[in-house]
Length: 554
Image (cartoon, rainbow, N blue to C red; front, top):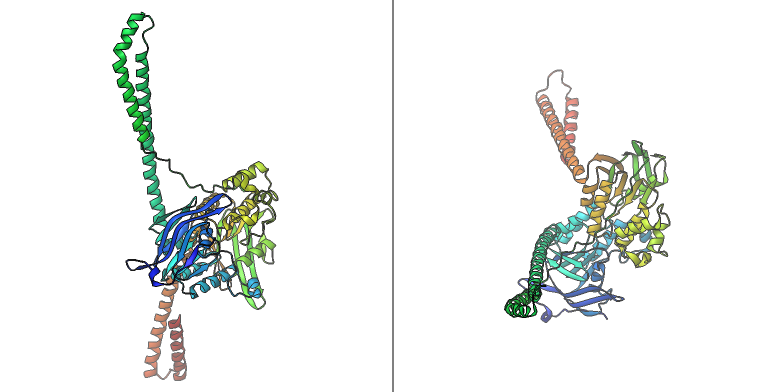
């Protein structure tokens, strides 16, 4: 039952101050079999709302967006869209793309096409499902600028924390089908969540304390009451009757007191213990038996496709234990370089003790005809018990391991591929966009895991925060060259800016020297001596002017 409707008439437009209502969700429910995936009481979206949607993989984030654009129907409730929408999908191919372009365009180039198509529609509502996947950093920054300047409303699912911070003014948390709205960007949302947890933990502890106190008082009061009923063992019958009669009043008072306490206990507002979001926990086995200083080396690397030059006289070295972020614009050759390393192409020298685990962004190591467990066990050097433990840490519990790959979300497929690599016989990791489609909590778990891993990691990522957390080396591909820098992405930018400042100072010095020489030449031309060659001086004059003009253009 498709409950999404579009209204274009003024009478359907409501105003909140100067902001127009663009989207209204009422009593919406969505089921998968008997499982309730989405259960939203009410959500109103206005112009200027830039909403980030967060939640664990499988929480229903993509399902929610698909319902908003009628790609999936809701089972109950209504969705009203006041105006048109555009949708940047997570997996679908761009609109109006040729078969040749499907095969030749990179993932980043396809994403850019989908983004451009969406913005060209000038819709009131923009829906975006992981729009930064496969984008280079320059592309992400351009997307941020477009999103900031967007006049309508935005609902965006993304694991890119930097993007959520720079663009969003609201965060929707999707948990067990329910939504909770925060008037904040991502970092502010995290702070609010932490404060909420502290408050809830305090309330829960006070509740437990008061509950225990009342229960102890009830037990003691009842114990006293029961003791009055019992006559001493050596007391005669007549004495016992007198004792019983004399204690009736006290017993009644104690019973009443117990009932009053029980009433207080029953009226006590129950406070649930705050639940932690179940997060991915993963440890990589220690990489052993790797003692070489330089594990992978590229010398005089040259590569071209047809007439397009990719690398020219490239050189790089990857040291044992380093965490190397491979960055550069879309189409510069990052994936090409990885494939050259894996294939051991000319100019690439690899230590013979390396056992490389390769994660591809297209997830081609997964067999879609098989279950999660079958995929993992196909290359595992560990037994099924340990494999299931690892899958459990990746939040694949009990019967989940028997799910086939096609029914999994994008993020869940990534987790299976990572598990398959981790459980294989490897000591070095090469990862091509490992954070694609993962939820934020899983990205943070990967950050911790790779940071603590004592083996070598070469990874491609455009997630700026992920690079800064993991990398201690940055390999940059730009203008057919390969350059190595110490430090993470921010440290690389800092070095780059310092070099630019040095270049500027050098240019200033060159300019000053040329200007001084120009003044000298002009003086000699105006009053030449017998030894001056006027023609040479005039030629030098023109040459200096040209050099100064070139410096001005730099």
